[in-house]
Image (cartoon, helix red, strand yellow):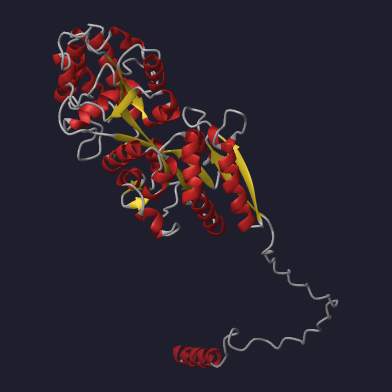
Length: 444
């Protein structure tokens, strides 16, 4: 009986526990909470919306080459630039302009300074720049240039020479707009050379009359600002030489380079190229030597010829004689570019450039600076002499843009070294060309 009684008591105990609800299901009554009213606070006013004053001044910062940004007695184009600035400001009363002259080249030059400033103090970057298009690859790689196709009038592009558009186009985008150009040409003494030479072989044959004194031809052939390499490059390109491989890496064809160097050496051995070319480092030095009567033919530029045209009645002009192949004319150019990505400033920058490129203004600029325009319609404004204008027109239509790749300065150095070694008799044309090509390969 005892076990039975124990089982009955256990059963009754479990039943009692099952009737008790969990505490979480039926919590104990909580006494009402007496809420003490908080002190009444004045409503916090919402911040007022900051509205941009449409009449507030906007500063457009422009970096310019010294001939544009610095006035003075020797600055022929400064007054022209001042006029288009005044016209732009009159049309945009709320705009203020901050103009800073910058060197064009070198470590302290415009492009180097811009690229150094961007990662450190980007707020100090210019909104607009005027620069040498040879520097375009550095700017394009950095991604600092704004495409201009949709910012500038279509008619502006339609009236440009092909080389000018090619010079500023990268992967189908027009990243700048050229406003002036300069070509390499041949200038010669018409009394000593009745007809200009069309090919390099003319120098090797001694000209048309073997009984007369041989006319001499001078060009830069020493290291300095790259002029010697540029004089070499027209022959190299005319023979089909390339400066890059299909993948874009720098390249120099040693066989073609050797042919040009052999022609240089042969012309010097024949007396057509005087040894004095080894002391000529720049185009300016070459031009000064020609004016002093050091030679009867000289490599020159349209800028130099136009500057001194009044004293050159006895001189003629022609395209440079080629070592071989079709004639090649290289065009160096300066261009406007937009840096700012601010929508308002970008539109103002485009207006400023459009003002500067109006035919009358850019024509006055090119005439004052003795340079050629990049727009066909402007050429008659710049050059009054009809024969020379026709010559310039033909050259501009067929010109190629100046080599534009980041490694070109190093290629110039390698080529100049090869020229010096060959003309000094330190290396054969073949050996110097191979050495230069090997140097270029190491730039990859």
